Length: 418
Image (cartoon, rainbow, N blue to C red; front, side, top):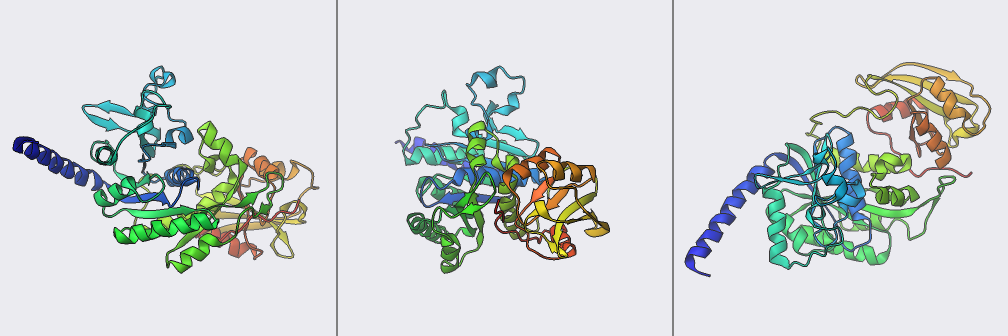
């Protein structure tokens, strides 16, 4: 390489460095989702974190730097630039575009934009055969040349391990924070320690550890069955002195949702509960950030400051099994003021399939909080526009409601024995 070529390349790198700095200055929080090994559900976790934050009203970008095995477009139903359904669609914002040498990310929703190498390939089956230096250049280009909006969060999905991709992110986004995903098995936990030590070596702050595939939730009754070892992720987090963000069980809805290009956090009430805890931890870490634009509430109470919360009771406390309780508390609350307006206690009709969801819908309920509920009942409540929260403790209804309003309601596994 001649001196002129060397100087020209140096100038280009310096110019790109300035573009990277300028771009990152518009992004408040950068979160790298990584794992020690493959097959732990890292990409699905990244997708659901991004969608969950976006649905809460935060401005979010999702960047897929898994260059050899990108899966984000499939999970979100985003077509490639060369797909017929993209070129024939009137909504050209559904896929990645190039305008004036700038990369325009795909617009998944008003608050979520996405970029992935898969969107730019001639075919989804095309193999990406690149060595390290070329991958480094592509990731830098994803940062410098993408026309991101002003973002509250940039979620970065990295391939497993501690190779070129996470290292490039660490070197070019010095204030990135890591969320590490593992499964309960010993082989995964062994590798996750390497990811933790990687972050410490490159001075990347670790937000915490997520244990994915933590038990199996029965689709018939909602009972949790521990297929693998239990508590390994939480134990590892304690031993390595990092935060434990939560557990995510195996829920059959997740597989179907991924294949259909629909985020599971939007289709599974049970999964949404678990991610609510994780998202609360992430936003608490970044508590100075408030949503740029609040998305509408997904329940029947959208557009109003008021909610009616239904709680099945047994001896004055939350019932663990909603179906056979003899009394419901219906509590009206002001979401903005975080206070109870009024309450009443009513006897439900007889327990038959579909009766209670319809009855509570007629009572004007927006949310039901319960200790346990089968998946069929959850679906019926969703059909009646009533949001479902399970795994709540057997406490007095006032305390549960106030914890819910203040974002402090701690939920565990879905308790259901039928």
